[in-house]
Length: 454
Ligand SMILES: Cc1cc2nc3c(=O)[nH]c(=O)nc-3n(C[C@H](O)[C@H](O)[C@H](O)COP(=O)(O)OP(=O)(O)OC[C@H]3O[C@@H](n4cnc5c(N)ncnc54)[C@H](O)[C@@H]3O)c2cc1C
Image 1: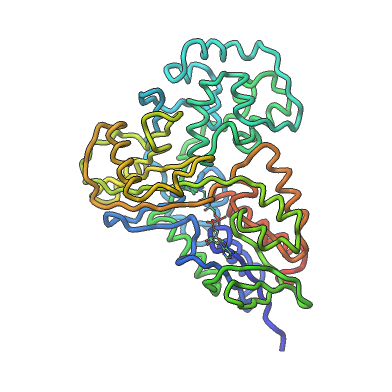
Image 2: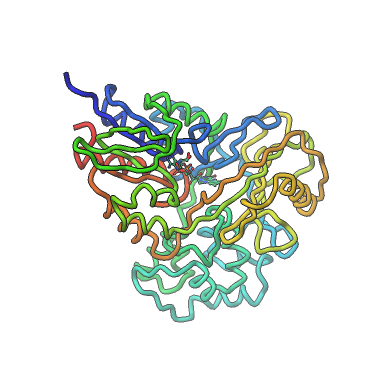
């Protein structure tokens, strides 16, 4: 009698659950697939809660719909009908005490034409940007400066602080000073590699073609709908324990958990956040462990509110906050305006915490809720008692893609022994689509190495 193949996935966030599903597809119905995760539910940063009677995502709430991974996965799982689009409402930027329309035609806030920023930056900055194509640009192919270094030098500090930083704070809880150009704006870096003579020319070349349809998508019913289907289709068994180590044994691998359990496996996918990886890899792949240890991370807190229906909010999808001003929040999502009303309450989310501060860790729930009240009063002049509220913290959850990140990740992967693969938000991009892709890549590498389904 042949013994069924056994696989372990360590970490049950979206990266781990997609890895489990891909393992099932590759290894067939008899394989035993165990997901180890000590959390009280699977999904990691994808988490849907009922607030004010409505399902709302309190971690990630959207995905870039122009990337293929999530729509393709939803299609494969028969969930395409659950994909929703934005209403078309756009975000605002709060800068210097005023609300501005988000500039059009930028790559992560890096403008393709100076006029798009007039009003947001001063006239001297607009003139400096107009002059940019005439100033000589020194660019070494493959270079990866921080966004602040390049954009600050070419377009000026105000463009960094008022246009680029608010977007990067939203995506990474980071800033232009910590994120590398190749992560924040890979197409701009590629255009410069290809010989663009100015940053303006590079951004124009890098702008995605104007396409009909929403840039962002989400799931009707929240990400829980996708999580449930991945769990069902992968036929995984969930061990609600934390992995403490991974060891080679004669027949493959053994994952040891913090309760002393041993989980034999033909191959293992490690889908934990970067700060959790070194403890699992320390003896096996010390160089890879060291690289993971050095990836900086930021924390964020999300305050999700249900306000009474009819609360006077602008017809916008939210507000991104530039600089440190009177507001505590770094971003507000007007969820009901962004995705369309789904119930009687007005749903919204406020995010707190950036790379380098410890707001998300150290601020109490009551204080965060009080800040949310103050921030909404400052932004929209409203003072209403929420119908319902929830505070959720995501500690060390957002990896920072500093200069040279992609090279370090290539080294990390190269240092892994055969039969082990990694997936997660610290590898090829922080968003859900990149996590889905990293999980597929992890399983493909195990299949290619004959550790799966052969
Ligand atoms: C507030 C916030 C908002 C975001 N918004 C968006 C968005 O709108 N769109 C978007 O595309 N992306 C967004 N992101 C990014 C995206 O949500 C994450 O990058 C992605 O969900 C990470 O998934 P993951 O599976 O790699 O990691 P995680 O979701 O962190 O899952 C890792 C899992 O590993 C488990 N684990 C840890 N240690 C161990 C161990 N020793 N043994 C076993 N298990 C372990 C944890 O319990 C956890 O469940 C957001 C992130 C945050 C924090």
